[in-house]
Length: 350
Ligand code: SF4
Image 1 (tube, rainbow, N blue to C red):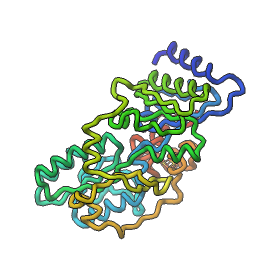
Image 2 (cartoon, protein in one colour; image 1 turned 90 degrees about the vertical axis):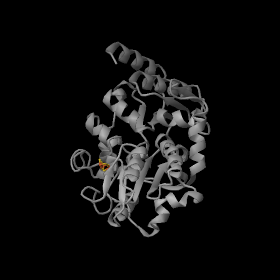
Image 3 (cartoon, rainbow, N blue to C red; image 1 turned 30 degrees about the vertical axis):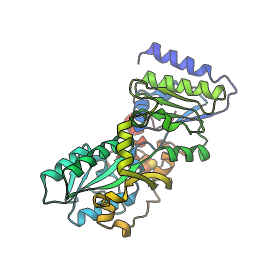
């Protein structure tokens, strides 16, 4: 973005907040937004009374220590676990998974199934984290798993649904409005967010698009429109979402309670395979119900994920905790807000 555009947006945003306007907290929910905002230093352009905080939109960051320990338990049983590389760097209760045998780094659910099909003598579990886009890819994959009668593939699901968490954040974090995740909305449609009790704008990822979305949020707040919902990413997002993806997701998965780092158990926020697909559910096949792992009390990721403090306000930030040596998930994941604040040297504060 050039200087002229930056000045234009800075002036325009300031016009919504004349002197005496109370403090406003906005939250960006998606890890890709977090990185774009940090990389382009967009917080610098916000009026002084507007705080933009990063929410729980990085799927790796919100998975708890228990999920890591369940993976470790599977690995030590000799099962191959296919997983996204960022999960290798998240500390569990006994260190990270790096160095464990039987790991397979993949870039998509399809990679995990491909590995299982090419290695029929090995049991392969896909350690699944993600929101609607990855979930819809996994749901599409399940029809192939059934078609191929694949007997050596299963899913350990920590797929998450963001809406229950946004509702919770509205009630106890003083969030005035949300920059909503464009990737998720491309699957779910804008209607998915219609019950939000705060203004929300589905945004794309270019800096000017993000600033325009913030502008719309501030305008809605200034005019008292609490239920304002706008699609500012129409090139990828429709009102009603992707019907085929939604059909596949609801065919294979159902909502259940899910654990979110820093937030605890939240009803209806995790997607697990339905009972009639239990033969593909690693949780049931390998009976992981006895695996236990407490969260690390020294880690402040929970406060960062809920907007209670910025990454730079964590005493470990940039010293004990760095991307090379992460102490918490928000630094370990490339989409995490601490990683973004470190990489782009913002500290995550204005
Ligand atoms: Fe967690 Fe490290 Fe961020 Fe502190 S700096 S909140 S320990 S990831």
